[in-house]
Length: 135
Image 1 (cartoon, one colour):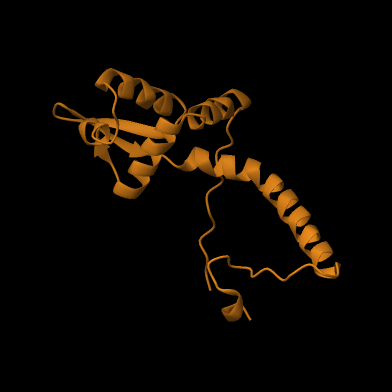
Image 2: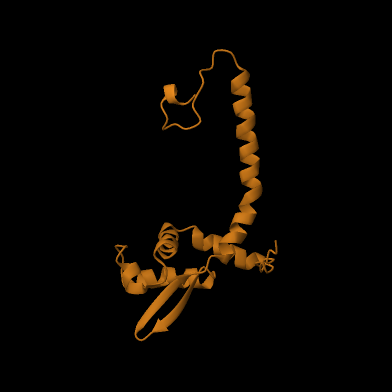
């Protein structure tokens, strides 16, 4: 089986990584990224329909996302179309990975401790599944 190797990923510099994290720190900008992820490239007018803010305010958020490399912009006539550029997010995931592993290990250890403790009721893995169905 011939697997095509993935091209090497560009590594963000520390200042670029800071721009990405700063951009992600704002809920409006995270929502814009979700809209572009779920709806594909969109004109600024369509994005603006989801927010109770002025066009200049939204444009400022889009500028921050552009500067962080999280969105790109192209002109189509008089419209500006924005597109998600997810590559910087993979570096965020890479950075967060060790923390996720840390907490998974801690929670697994807590679960093992609770399993060994007498008198602690069993809790189903899925809180949406009733106790009688969890077995």
